Length: 316
Image (cartoon, rainbow, N blue to C red; front, side, top):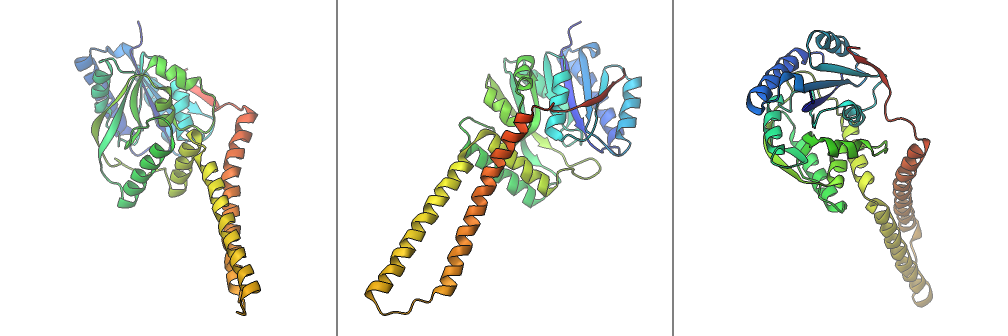
């Protein structure tokens, strides 16, 4: 029997919400059977444990051992959200593959709508957030700014206000899995591949339990990964900034030369000189930092290490 649908769920330290997640996944499987005519034997759900430190691994392993259609891919350590998704996609065998987070902000029941829309002839149907419950104003504002910034930097269209919650065809997933890059921004990679894509809106819930695993530092790292993975404009910006500072330095030099040769004004140099040195030094450090980010990526890719290591797949 051909497997019709795979659902990939990366998990990291979510023991508190697992009972509710299991219950809603069971309900979703029944909805897929009744509304989409996908038999239970034609569905699989792949949990990817991304190095959890709590009881997440034990609870999921026990559930998978007693419920047909569920598998657990256990990574050897924490590799990060995007690589955990990549591991799940590599082992998904369905004709269509769904990616969703396990914190229940992405409602599992909405998979039914994604699947029905995908069957209209789309290779990708992404879920667009029309409301974001339980998120601070700062989080919403920075997320909105990030999507609009990256949209202006890349040469292809990345839909705004969307996460990784989406359904994709098997051929789309095959192209994503063929990309060996280690700094992955999957929603950008999906847009880069192309094919027929569309989005449908949904109401994003607040977390059912626990706290977010994305700190401000991780969010900034993720945003910078997204920008530098698909655009070299930061390097160009650093060059432009260097030219601007050099031009301003030349203008200031001509001004000082004019005062020296054609006037009797005393040149008060200490404050202005120190200010200029600090500004130029700051620009140089920023430029070196941007260049260093790209050089670091070249270094990471040159090592050709595997994207992730799997400890085991359960049930065996």
